[in-house]
Length: 302
Image 1 (cartoon, rainbow, N blue to C red):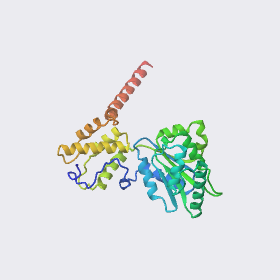
Image 2 (cartoon, one colour):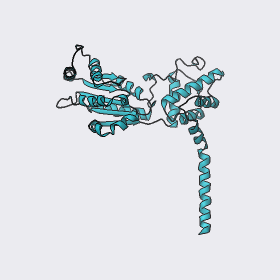
Image 3 (cartoon, rainbow, N blue to C red):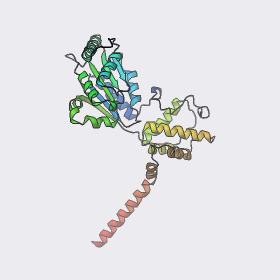
Image 4 (cartoon, rainbow, N blue to C red):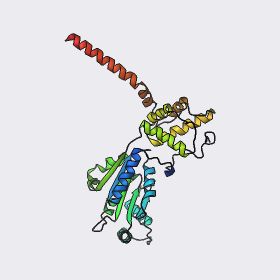
């Protein structure tokens, strides 16, 4: 809608995890480095957690796109699966064909044979699960049993779990101690800082074709950073709404009023956080003055 008005050739703040917009910010680069190192060293279980909207799916897709050719990747984006459905999904991703009435023990045997065959040809098999916090308990246990499949030198199947913090809470339970102990590499995605948010917004606009004067000044990006708590999905929503409001008024760039209106219109954005940040220097000054005054009174009493 506003693309032509602002000199853009595509939507800069779409919520679709498009790897073409990937930006090498510290938390995302570090997560990829952890994943790539763990996979190269043959680790059985690797885990990446982060709040909703922190970029897990984008990193997941970026990882899959950048894996060396020796890796054969099986990707399960919606893992709310029973143990049987999990085995069927893995078998399908491995290209197996089997009778519809096959029992689970036979299916597991076929999966193991396929893993051995792929390994013999120099392939490393990686099972990537997005939204792993949705896996039922018995499916998590079935997943652990999958990683028992190994040769004398390496695991036949490596598993990468992407999930929300609820996954960490579940894995703390006693019944998952065996699985928890097998996770040798893990990374928690943190939110973006203000500087990172500013760079993120400018990067996405540049990828979308923006040239010339910036559409957001540092004042507006700071507002977005604080109201979004540094969560990329919320940053995208707020920036998109601010551009819509600016376009609706025929403005040539985003104004502070547009960002404030976008924040007020977005349920998960925090106006209170923005206000508390605005008044923080004032309250800090009061604290310092009060502290100095109290010290003076105490000295007088002494």
